[in-house]
Image (cartoon, rainbow, N blue to C red; front, top):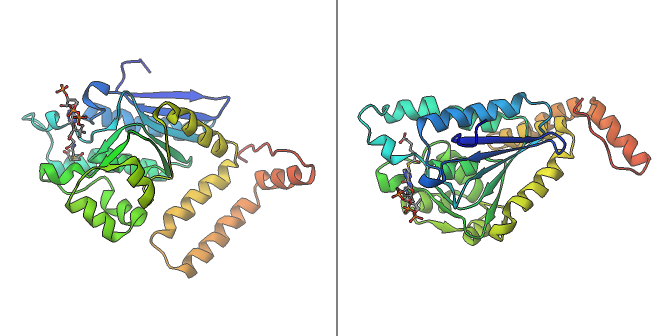
Length: 263
Ligand code: T3D
């Protein structure tokens, strides 16, 4: 992928980690149509790549993502908003939530509008001290989209979600940590290293178990306890029959680190 692409994908096969970087720093990584196409292609690429076991999503420059490119929206041939959301944004969010590999959001700066939604669609988020989160949709007369109305109440509760959605003031990384929107805040210079450390830990785990865990956490948001218990039993039946589980047991017995194959 050329270095001037709107989305960069770097795969480190030795570490089993792919880093996807939103790459329009001059516009704070605001999302254009070609960039959305590239981002969807990036998630499909890392899903297909069997060497990848964990993914980092971050932004180039000082921003994570300023959401929809508003200049593009002013162009006369811009697609109607409902079409744009249905055909461009929603497939990206589905690809992220359906990705069998956990995504670590490395939130390096402002995450606004659909950029905040992208952050929320990651499996976990680690933020730079300089990051801010803003549901900027309301300021341009729009409804939170790209999953924001679904993710936000689940992550931070209905009351805080409503304040963010209706009032829309940006919140700092510290506040995001306090309300549970991110799991860690680190100095800006450490962000990628720390995101990488978390991704390394995930990539060292059993890929099948990680994929099934992602499925279970995803389903848990919408089901009752009884259904969750039965669902866990089914998924555990699959994980328990895997070569990786056998390897985990052997490693325990032999007092060594497991070497998971993904089988
Ligand atoms: O298809 C659809 O439209 C439906 C989907 C909608 C989903 C959405 O995402 S709606 C929300 C869209 N996003 C926003 O409303 C955020 C707009 N940006 C801002 O409010 C501010 O830029 C920030 C708070 C994010 C950052 O402020 P600041 O002061 O740090 O930077 P800046 O000077 O405003 O921006 C730097 C450059 O990035 C500037 O370009 P210039 O003047 O130097 O050439 C600015 O225009 C550009 N930029 C920032 N955000 C966007 C953008 N360009 C296009 N679109 C943007 N969203």
